[in-house]
Length: 302
Ligand SMILES: Cc1ncc(COP(=O)(O)O)c(C=O)c1O
Image 1: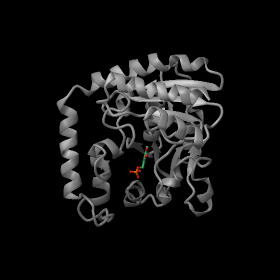
Image 2 (image 1 turned 180 degrees about the vertical axis):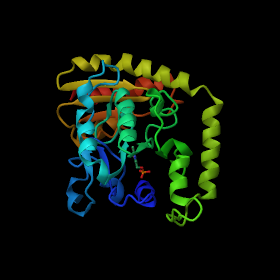
Image 3 (image 1 turned 90 degrees about the vertical axis):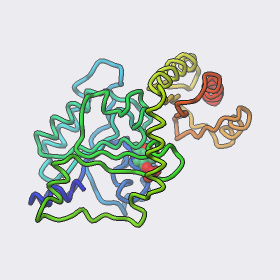
Image 4 (image 1 turned 135 degrees about the horizontal axis):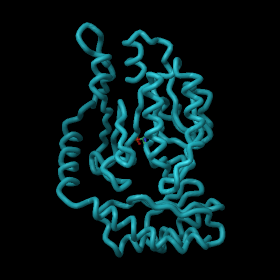
């Protein structure tokens, strides 16, 4: 969509994208090409389109902002903006290839620099959207609005497959206003009525209870209960934002050890590399959250 937008405006050279190291956008070819180049898809590198990557944001969500964190992205856009259609990032929370929460100021700077360089900004809110980070969308931590946004996951409450790409008016107009063209990406099951009905019901349900208080309660509880893991040998970091908790361990736990803990506690844990993490549903009661954090701590203990 971003590339077609640039072509519609006669900017044929803007045909690549920029993304972040440590990013994750999915497992199809296009999405793998935008995910961390040294991450889980590295073996497919030769098959994938080549895009630009800026350094992973390191300034923590709740730390003092460090301008150096944005230097790599600023340079990338200064040097290559005439080849770049859009920048895509997971706002605030880089998921499967980093499990890290970064500073919202990064997004404000990114919005500014994208505007300066006539580059679209895409937020992948597939994992973060609908409350996961404590705000309805992670971009709300920064007060920044992208040009294109991807949503999925909680959109349909986890019961049926559905994702959506949302474009601002200026993007859709540039592509398809009178006499221009059309956006011709139409898979067979696009706007599937059953999935859309499930999504509508799910969003209604989300709006019908105080999910913000639940997420805040879970955040406080997971912070409190996981704090002691910071002192475990072999634990590098513990971080919690909204309804996501991560223990970063030095040594990747063996599958046998993971299975042992899963069976013992009856808690489904699936660590990614060095990250033992949990993203429980917002309706998880307090005693079940404790059950989850206990299992995470025992696995982190080695
Ligand atoms: C940030 C992000 N983007 C994209 C995807 C891919 O979504 P799907 O698995 O629905 O293709 C995921 C899935 O985990 C994700 O976390």
